[in-house]
Image 1 (cartoon, rainbow, N blue to C red):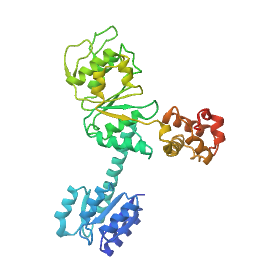
Image 2: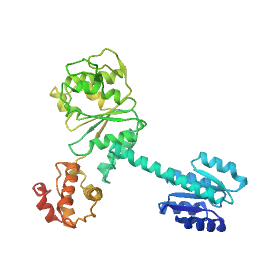
Image 3: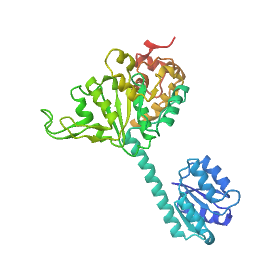
Image 4: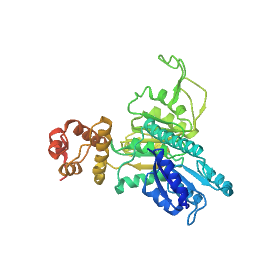
Length: 391
C-alpha cells in the first residue's frame, strides 16, 4: 500500500488525517513542520505528501520547493485555510498536484489522493517503459575512470557537439551513446542506431540515405534512410571505422550541408541530426593506411570519449558482478545466488579481454550452472578464465 506523509503543525488535523488514511489501508508518516517533513522525505520512500501551507520554521511552499530541488518526486496535495487559497494556487504552479481547504471534505480528499497516486504511478511506469524501449540501463561503476566518462557525458550531452566514442569491444560504447541521447534536449525524439560493420558496403548508402523506387534491381518501393528517420534526434553510427570510403564521402557531405539525397533521387532533403559515432579501431592509423577520411574524422571528433577497458577499472568488477547477479536472477525468476569471497577475488584478478560483455556472460553462465552459491571452484570448472589471470 502507498506511503503517505502528513505535514501539519496542528496535531488535531494530523491525528484526524492519519486515522482516516490508516483506515483506508495507507501507510502514514507525520511531521509537525516543514523542516521535519523534509528530513522525513530524505529518510523514507514516500508516495504522496499532504502538506499544510502555513507552518512555522519552513512553510508548505518552501517544503515543496526544497523537495523539488532535492529530486523528490512524491506529489504534493496542499491543505489550506480559506485565507490562503491564493497561496495554494501558487503552489500548484510550482508543482503541487492539488489543494484542499480546511476542514477537508472526506470524499474529495480520498478521490484527490487516489488521482494523485494514479498519476504518479503512470509517470513511473512510463519512465520504466521508455527505458525498456530505449534499452538504456544504468552506467554501473564508481572508479575514477568511469566517473570521468560520466562527467564528460553530463557536460557534452546538452550540447549539439558531435561525439566520437572509442574503446575495445564490449566496453559499453553503445551505452555511452544512449546516455548522451537520453540527457540531451533531443531525447524526446528517436535515437537511430546503425551498425556500419554489419551492413554490406553496397547497401550502406541505401541504409543511411534511403532510396527511390527503381533505384536498383531490388528497389521495388521507396525507402526512408536512417538520416531522415533520425531527423531532430540522434544518429548513432557504430563501428564507423568499417564504413566504406564511398559512404564516408556522402556522410561528410551530409554533415557539411545538413541535407541528403536518396539513392536514385535528385531531391535535396534537409535533415537536422546530431551524430554520435563509435569505433574499436585506431582511426588515425586507419587514416594513415588510407582506409578512413581525415576530414570526416575531424568532423566527427569534436568531442572524444574513450571508454576504458574493464581491466583498467578493476574496482568496478565487484559492483558490476553484483548488478548482473541481481538482474539475471530476477529475469530468470530464481533466488539470488551469493558469490563467495574466493570467487570475487578470482573475478577481480582476471584480465577480461571481452570486457563488460564477457563479465555478464560469465555471470549468466554461473547462475545457470551453479547450485546455491558461486565459488572459485565453480568458476574454474565452468569457464576458461584462469588462462588470463593478472600476475
